[in-house]
Length: 583
Ligand SMILES: Nc1ncnc2c1ncn2[C@@H]1O[C@H](COP(=O)(O)OP(=O)(O)O)[C@@H](O)[C@H]1O
Ligand SMILES: [Mg+2]
Image: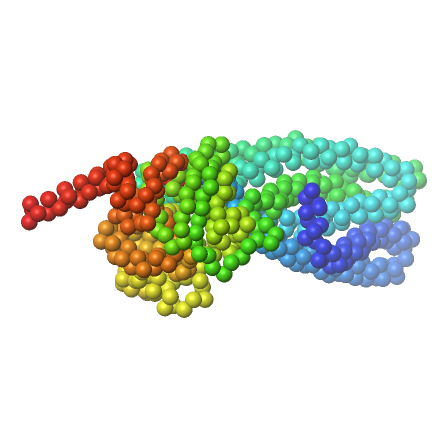
């Protein structure tokens, strides 16, 4: 599977890669010349005293070494270059794939997991292409060439050498089988470690606020210990096999000297041939020694490829069907028909039926966990409803092109996320080409213009990854401006003004009155004042619509909405009284 995966990425570089392997073939063959000549020099120059041959032999040895080094340099550069191009593409594909995945994927996947795929796992692939492939090939060739020359010089002697390699190959294979699962476990633990770090950094304020530094250190330590254990587990497999491998390869030298020496004494081998044999031992020894490491690398590559493939093969459940509807604008009439929805097994929205006319403003109230955000998630198709259907402008939302549909919806989410960019960049995130005036207008509507102007660099102020330096209410207003700037046909405000003071909220509402009369608007809030003027107010309780109507109707109902109204009104009357009596 890993090989099939890499073949696809290798395809564009087939020629260069093949050429590289041809050069490897040449250098491997050149590797044989020096050992061979060593024997010849001993025979001809030393034994037969043909001193005049020494210089030419030396020149050959020198030039072969030089050419070999140059060629090696060339192909190493070539493979390195190809590998960089390939992992560039893999990284890009991974990132693109991550972009297509839906909310369900993100619910299940941790950031640390994705990060380790984008870095460590991809690097194992680079190493494989840049180093492992040619090394496997080179070592195999050297092994074959070396043995071939040995068999050519002396069959019996070569056979003995060859037989010793068989148990060695067997051990190397055993090592490969045993070590592979340990690599997968190392990679899995590594992403867990990454996740701990990532969450600790993102949640650093919570950690500090609850004085949980020690707890966090312990948590990291636990993951770190496990990571260490996984690595040790892997090295233990190595420790079991490596000494045997070393012993077998080392025994080759002894065998050569003892058997070869004996054969020379018995005159069935010349001293020159023994020298050649001895200098060729590396051609058998090195590949065997390397095979352990290369198997190690291959297993790591295969484990990492599988991790990468998990993402490349992941398919979103929510995607564009062929011939999806695209509209230049929506009128914004919406209908929920018997909509049920569950994230996993527990249903969080039950049989929602609701008709909304275009241009209406809908207030949504309900306790935390009632299902307000889930309701909105369905409308944006972050998730699909489990049963029933949602129609926008009379068409099932599943028929729309996703980006087109979402392009007509402006949403200010409950969990605000601001990018590490300028304030303007954040507000104009959805409309980067719009003139600056639009950003300013949207900010004014969101009552953000005032405080932005007071920032050191106004709209060019860069805010941190999580909007460091801004208050909750300020972030909410920037998020609101970002939604308004889009000029959407459907506007969704999920708890957008909860951290904004009453007075500012009142200003925002005044401004939005005109703005939202032209579009369907959803306002999720806990304050009666936020939803009071809506055309329809729905009250959700445990995933059901328990009340529906406008303010007057719901007041008459004397139910949840009425109770909230009374309690909030009571508070403000109380405050009023205090002010009066104090004054
Ligand atoms: N991503 C999710 N995965 C699983 N359950 C979720 C998820 N998001 C919300 N829930 C659950 O769905 C229910 C409704 O949540 P939500 O729609 O966020 O409520 P609200 O916005 O009214 O506070 C809650 O019980 C919550 O625990
Ligand atoms: Mg919510």
